[in-house]
Length: 277
Length: 306
Image (tube, rainbow over all chains, first blue to last red; front, side, top):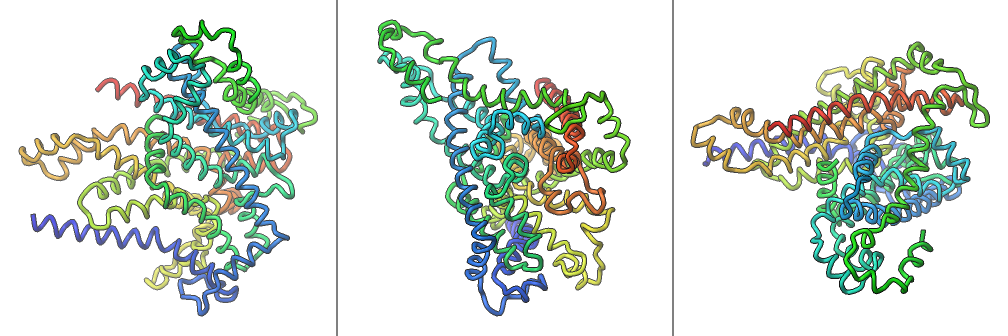
């Protein structure tokens, strides 16, 4: 037993050391460079800054391009909140009926849900459709796109979870005179809370970090999201590495906060979503 | 969307009849409506339209039918062909690495090691960081002259290559960063898979005096197969259509040596060749479908067999 104990320690320490180098050093580098002055940041080393000026750099980032970064944060927040809220309600309704009601359509619907998960969206034709309904380059259009592309994942999670809610509950509510809407919103939806938290957190992170979507479907001045400003930032502020990394740090904070508070739900969501997909 | 529900809920006339248990009334089909509408308009219609538009020269204002010319172009232009082959290399490389490293880390993190919780958290965190942020960070770290990686190698007396500037390594370097970023999910899935293996198997094996390797080869590996399936499918679906990491790190360069289909689609779109771009989309669709569907079928059948 004693030898096993020592072995566990040694293996653990080696793993710890390797993971520190591989996984922590990049983040430590981001933090350090974001805290340096422009000239110190230019040598891209792990040397400590002579003067920590993270706050000043962040303020400088927020001030660039006439508040472009602030606008981008507002855009990204709007996009994330609206699309996740819509996604939850729409996907919960669909997943609920899909699980409860057996019909010959189920096979087709399940197939489409899987297709939505696997098939890469056709870019230009989507733009063409959006343009003909007049929602291309609009926030509303972008929200609908995010909802559409996230639906499959959410429906799978909700369908699986509704399966764990006993049908007797539905029947009791119906006997008490609840209509389909009352049944869904008052009885079922509150019970979906655990899976809903998972969906909200996972999708919020996904939408907030989405780069390709806004790149294609939300171009135009004033529409930038944080990921796009970050990408554009590297060409505009050439050699101002401290500002670039302050921006990266700033954008990492929302997912970090999410992770700290909802660690368990994120992990559960990633696994269950993966296994059912 | 919000007006339709009130009409149905506010209809008091049928109150008495609704009290009877009726499945169709309790779970109305129109609950599908918002999801179906979005799915059809913004996903199904564009997908089907792409098959037509890939056969045209297209400027969004007018289309000219040119048959299979776009596809011929796609498989003749050397830089487009490169994107095609790179997609496979990238997809399979990242997928295989995630399986191997993810399984090893999963084994490590379900065993008795110090700092287990810390390690899990650290490995998972990159999953949540924006891909662009990760890409730009590693672009700086992989800088051939000033980058931290080559700087550290120089201390050891090794001259590191131009990770992203050498055509030989560019795609592989991006793939490595992709693995770094996505490893957390693979590891988590494996941890879940390993934990769910009943302990009786290992106890029986211990009674029989099995070695660590026999345990791994005859118990763990066969019984985590569902996890392996998931990791392979997930990382292939993600890897074959991967765009943002490559775009943030190399823009498909140097030249077009690290282009994949997804970045070709974007480049052709930017250049205004909408028909060609859409043809790229169709090619990507076919590639993903031809790989994922048989694989899925194969895995499912083997699972049923057992």
